[in-house]
Amino acid sequence: MTLRRAEDIEVEQRGAWFFRSVVITTPNATFSLRGRRLRELEEQRVGGAALVGESRGRRLWWVGDGFYWDADGLDAEHVALEVWDRARRREHRYDRLRTIRAREDEATTTRRERIPEEVRILVWARDEGRCVRCGAEDELQFDHVIPVAKGGGNAQENIQILCGSCNRSKSDHIA
Ligand SMILES: [Zn+2]
Image (tube, rainbow, N blue to C red):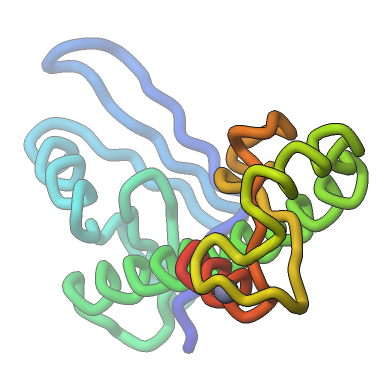
């Protein structure tokens, strides 16, 4: 894909009101925009793409707050879609990273903050040494009702006994 984010762009506002102009300086060219054309471009760049000008066979597009060089002769709609798609993929990637990080943080915190012994004893008695969901009596684990990563603490009200299989199905629902 030959649409590239333009680096080293300077945008300078000059004048005011009807005499306002915007000068866009790239390493190879300077574009001076004013009057009706400036207003049109400023409208087009919001939610779309505005063609600023050409330099050395490439076209400079203004999209939102960014600038892009295009050597493929894309039209405004394609440029806007391309930029939107990149932002969406980037956001999707950050979402995945956030999830992975939250899981790792949770694992770390859980290891760090052990449930106090006296709370375990109270919870064990209260839950009668069984999984509170299915009543199983083996592979039991102390579980935070509200996960530590979501602000749940080690008070007995937030601790319950679950068997491994109920605990796993609970984590799947949270994730
Ligand atoms: Zn169970």
